[in-house]
View (tube, protein in one colour):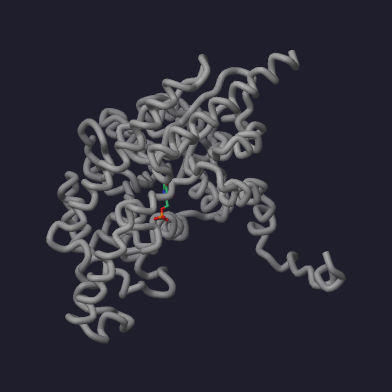
Length: 411
Ligand SMILES: Cc1ncc(COP(=O)(O)O)c(C=O)c1O
């Protein structure tokens, strides 16, 4: 640190929450993974060819032809206004009846979760998350000074009976009950599993019984490669306590930074009220124009075919190459496979060796609030090509074998 830096240390002016959370080691670790040049199985990035560059250019051209300057004005033109209609139509196709009054537009799912946090969470409130869960959501919850508790998962999603037991214990002990439960019901990040419809119904019963909100985050639900979709929690919930969050990040591109919330009209009014900075109306108009005439539906079909190929390649390659004792999830959609390595393998410790060998992944421990997940890793099949995925899994298998030999030699 230079003298100037030292004398100018103004970090005491940060809020208490920022001071408490600013040194999280996980964030530094990301950069090394991202910039390594190894096969990228770490992040849930869509594969580059999936982006509809040309179609967005012609959508922008025609938007200007139709709307002229209005497309760039604060409020935008009629295409920007029509985006909630498009979202309502998509929701209906998935079994959810809603109106545009139940839609609040956001700058992606992350911003949507943040909006829900701003609206409902006070410091000291309890939030329940799945263990493991999306670390971006954990980071947001931490910003609100809440207590985060977790409930384990299995191959059918959140373990509802473990949740019921946890809630009963809290009630009996007079401990605080949760204000909100955060779940990723379809093709969960990081495990890839989907919450069964039976458990969705039971979750709603518990939310009513213990009076908490369900925040259902569903960025991957439309990217399904096998099987039928269970009804969305919000469609099953007649009490209005389910808030649904979604995004175009995975079905168009993360760079459009557009997502939405589906919730009770009375909630949406508050989301609209606290929303600072207005809306990127041009992007919204562009999305609506691009999606018109079934173009988005067709794009989602094509994307699903591209991702299915990648998922299949990853599962085949894992089967072929990983040492005995390694297990993994077999997702019906989404971006992620969750791997458990044999005893003695520490995925965080092994990461730099894996990068040297030519592959990146995210260690399982990044997705927990507690000290667990050391033998797990999240592999994303969304970003690399099928051939690169195979190469990456070969590099991972070699690294795991070396790690097992090292652990045996240490014994
Ligand atoms: C579960 C989950 N929620 C939210 C996001 C972020 O979505 P957005 O890019 O719309 O902020 C992601 C993806 O990265 C995710 O996996």
